[in-house]
Amino acid sequence: MKPISRFWRFLLLPLSFAGMLSISSAAELNPAAVIYKLPDQIPWGPVNAAGAQAAVVVGDPNKPGFYAVYTKWTKGSHFSHPHFHPNDRYIVVLQGTWWVGSGTKFDPEHGSTPMPVGSFVTHFGKQVHWDGAKDEDAVLLIMGEGPATATEVEEAK
Image (cartoon, rainbow, N blue to C red; front, side, top):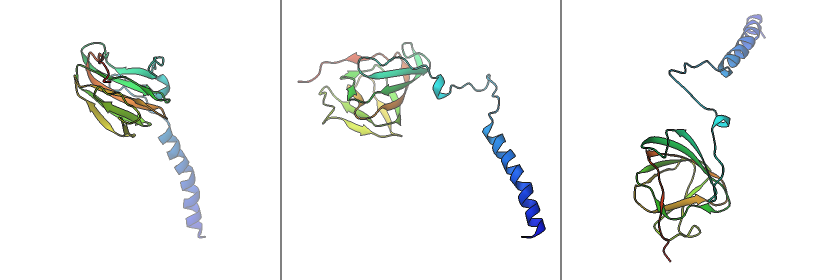
């Protein structure tokens, strides 16, 4: 190996390590421009009787205005029953497989459609649907205009 080549190798090695360290260190962000919560700072609520857990990340779904909520459907065939919301809701599947059904006939085994990670779903206001998780947790980002009430409907026999 030529002496010049060895010189550049020994010079570039410490410079590359310095570059990697600068990439991994976080810059301080101006809170007037950007705020954030890391995953361990998201305020998840308890798992409810239907097997779902929620964390409000923007707004208040109980009040008028825009909201964004993470919802986790826990594995074990946990589903909501037929219901509707007053306004459209926009949902992104972030983790797992989310199962979606529509109408008043509640049949998770034969009447639901799987939505894999990356799926985008619109629940239209005042239209009956139901959803949940089967054999794995499903984490969703649900966005819409509040209030985000849910009105249950009678299931078809």
